[in-house]
Image 1 (cartoon, rainbow, N blue to C red):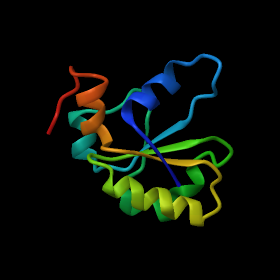
Image 2: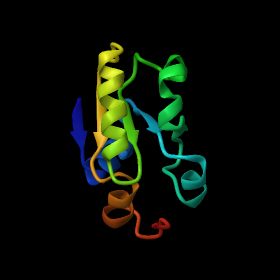
Image 3: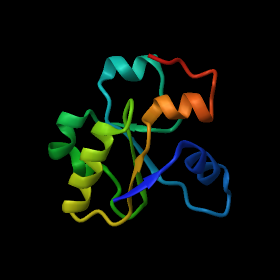
Image 4: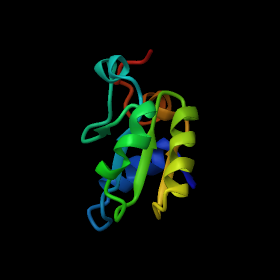
Length: 107
């Protein structure tokens, strides 16, 4: 599992020459209502084991949560399941709001 910082992810998403990753948000539904990264796929952490077949394993996957703890656990799980390129968003949406999008709601 690799780590990616919020600013690095923003640059990756803006790079037209680079394939876009799957943005897998593993937060709870109530958290998603507060804020989210555009285009993210939502599967709550506790459902990932039963729904990981919904995630495109042929693409890079960036796992997202509030601060980076849950996403790190899910990223390690996906690697054990055979996913190739899995990244944890360090600092989660909190880091994204602080470093990339100051208009994003924080909680």
